[in-house]
Length: 588
Image 1 (cartoon, rainbow, N blue to C red):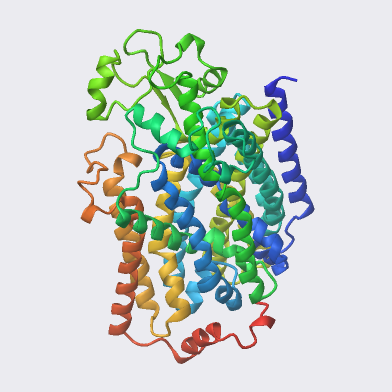
Image 2: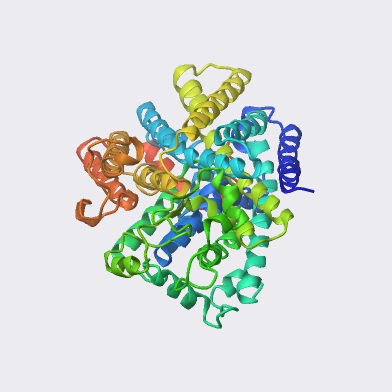
């Protein structure tokens, strides 16, 4: 059986499974559409949360970012997992005890203000739309290669699949679909990693293989990788940069994780308050299975790519372009790999031509500039082909990449549609709407969100994990502070919450667009994205904590200058935090 047919069968079978689950778990009420009827077992919810969380950024882009940069990008791992600790300890059980369906609903009721609810809806939509771009981009990348279609066609197919199971099933259908998607993606991610770890180190456990000896050279794998990348003018793979920048970026990812609406609403689906905390714990366990493997996948992919270009080592001649391996030919079709023969020798010169210190050595070898470029997003998807693994493994990684992208996209789209139907239409525009009409509005909102996500996926502002990092910064600066103050401060009032969220949103967005403006609007005169131009050296992708501090400060200052919240609101805040009777809380 040829590879295309195998890919089609495996991906098609996984899609049929998702649609079948959606039909079986079709939502029949708003409670099932928004919160799966609040009857999800915490272990099941933990697995669904892990799938919701492990997006295209985690499955496709994270290992690529680690491979491209090395040790410094381990901050993605630390920040994203650390965020779940914050969720488990500070947010999930208290929000579940409050018993609402959506994040804006909690903010609107806690701060006794429709204005606060609407501002929260705006923040939620900005965050979720930004985040979903990466998922649609990831789905397009996977489709374009493995099903041999245009990226745009892949996006349309992915959108159609999400439309069926998300619009039909709502949170109920999405939950059980995500359980299936988790199983697909974790198997798809782990099996190729085991094969490649065995090939390179003889160790079947990728996380241990990363610290084992490289079979061919006898050196520790990371020592070998450091050697080959520095021989080509790249930075040492294990080198670290500024601890301040790394800590700030990690913190941005942590509090951004704890403020992501599509993650938070998963904790509204369990029967009891204690189950919310257990769900977060189980989610960490399921996430760890992939996250402990990702650093090894990144390092081994980087080494494999260099070995395919310089089979006899970087000190010797590169492979002839006409004799390039099949995996390069396959991925060139997608446009995500390019080659330009700058010195006319017919060989693939791959090195860091931006390294001024390496320029003399490159000239001496007759190199006239780097000739080979690849998109970091391809590394996980291409890894089985690079390592010449069996065809069924390649098909499996295709299904896994699509499962990761679609599972998170569905969660994000549900968060958007719930905010529109429940927080805008039901709570603001038409409070007397019937449950049947609200359910219809939720499904129409979901369909509209899918159309918007597809359009943005066709015109993405960057590769998946970069775009996702922007969403984290916005979530860290807006939703997270509002939830924390709503739970732990009786003094913050509606005016303070509204001003805080607006300050966090505007300041963070302005900073991001100022330094990443070229990312969204090419050919503008915005400031270039370099450390020399950043305010106090703070990367735009690490600005979330600064926005959060400004949010907190603005909210407390305004609250201190205005009237205290009503007595019943202060009592409500107190009741949320007190554990008495929590085990019996069921919400509404």
